[in-house]
Image (cartoon, rainbow, N blue to C red):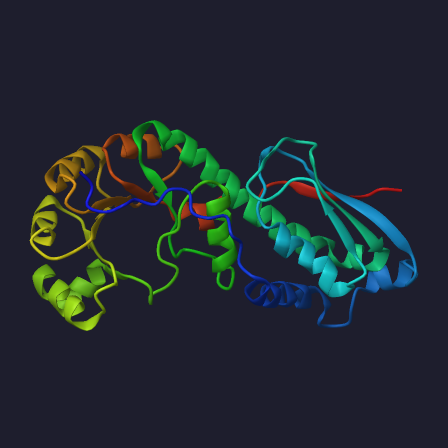
Length: 292
């Protein structure tokens, strides 16, 4: 029996505008802070109207439409959008995702910012779905890490949820994870856990990273909620899972890629944390086409 409920696919509730708008504004300023859109300002009359379609160039999973479309709205509130495929939906090459209509200048000026966000987040969702499907027969859950793009964590973790994965901690302030460098300064595993338990509230989860079976034995003698089995080969992971015997949640981490995740899942671990999802997954190819 597992000691606590495991995460499934978390809610697809997306980050609110209070979180998303500053990120999109910052991205737009990278393009516009030094003088506006010289090309569009010279070629497109202020009253020119246009219609454009967001189109998938390759198959994947949609994520980040709010942020993408907000780029156009912030440039001109007269822009209107018609969404055909919502976040979390699978898409095929050639599928239309959304139609944007209104002032042509806003559509052209916001194009790159919008596509950067949508392609990046959809790429994360697509990679997550690939891994989720690979481990589905083994009951393991795919979770992300804090290896996110600075400033984009809320959006990138939302993209993981869109792909069917779940979120690990969002920051240093919502859970305890005692890692090897903490232990190097704190001393023994027992002392580290005792000091943490004396410091944090009773609702805070405590996880400890271990590299060896002996460290795992020591960790299981302390009041923890989860163990992070760091860079263990699959046979050692299986041994660790057997030793834990459901007393705490087991999480495998380190070097996880599509080509390695199945062997890791076969070990019987509860969670597989994958930093690659948010720092190495390729962006999904999505384009914007003006429709005349």
